[in-house]
Amino acid sequence: MARVGKRTLIYRWQRFAFACACLLVVGSCSSGDDGAPRTVAKIVSSLPRTGSANAQTTSIVNGIRMAIEEAGGKAGALAIAYEDWDDASARKGDWDPEVEAANAHRAVEDADVLAYIGTYNSGAAKISMPILNRASLAMISPANTYTGLTKPGLGEPGEPDMYRPTGAVNYFRVVPADDIQGRVGAEWMRDLGGKTVYVLDDRGLYGKGIADVFCAAAEAAGIRLLGREGMDPKAQEYRSLMAKIRKLDPDFVYFGGTTQSNAGQIAKDLVSSGLRARLMVPDGCFEEAFIEAAGHHVLEGRTFVTFGGVPADRLTGRGKTFVERYRAKYAADPEGYAVYGYVAARITIDAIARAGKHDRSAVRTALAATKELDGALGTWSFDEHGDTSLLTMSGNVVKNGKFEFYGLLGSAVAAKP
Image 1 (cartoon, rainbow, N blue to C red):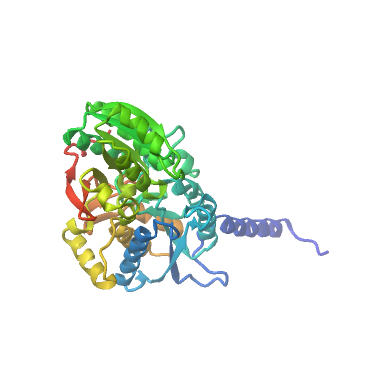
Image 2: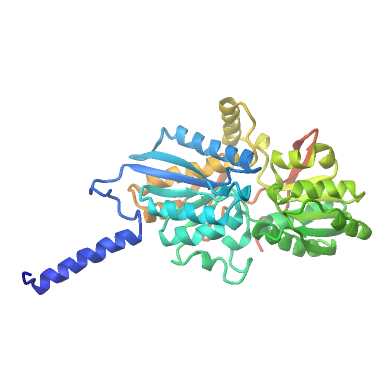
């Protein structure tokens, strides 16, 4: 074996260390395996495409595709490649922790990927956030609302730092969080004449989280809490539970959960048990699948739904233009979160273009500096935690088998807790 000088050994060690660093931080290097500059900016979405959430997530994906088409398929000098990934499994019929983790690792390992649009469910975000954070890969959610993902002191102990192992913020969301939604829901219930409430939740991250916020806000609004219970979202029926609640005769039942955690069955059993109570649910039920699951005759006149933002037919300016173009392209009305998918993709494309290079950290930094003026959702920006400055919330009811706008909620939402 030939003798190697000390300086040569140091040089070789430095080259080896640099190569390892590039492997550990996949995609941070802007060149391909052959050393040529990367020319493709890949954007992936991770959403439940299997199960009853499919109609809502199809609407989101349609919005993403529209934004890419509007940009001419390019972000600055880079060509955009988009992949629509499913984070649900046939076994669960909903998002699956194992699938979501696999999607996050798959994105990290593909050096072309510069942004991850997702998740739809807050529980899924909890899984992928730290994986993507370690790779400095930007994550933009069009639908997550659980407070603990971003807001210090408003979630469980250790949140949100546990989702940011590097200390940097790489997760952003374009929807208002549940600290706002839970509060305005309680205020709306009070204004509807509710004096007593029984609260249910699906024991999930999102459902329990918003129910916690609602309970605290209800007390502050002067609404008496008659009971609080976590229920099995996979149960066949809830007749015995509703019989117990009926004896307490609340003005309202509040359900913290989603269509996929059996909101439709809860609504049906509430009515069939003879409860006079009205039902209030959060944005996780603001989808046509909820009406289909419960039956519109069950929901009409007694169901109230809170939502971050306003329904599609109430958008104005560029938002209205988006809805018109969506209808023309897909011959259907967009579901509630379609515009958020569209906006998430628009700002992602803009951030990649402003970054000026194929570099994950640069894209993350550019995304954090986003300030959209007169966009489809109006004028807004991200705060230091990755939350949108938008605070608009709406109330909606079911009428003639469709969601109908009731009004804007929360005159005091500008004052964050």
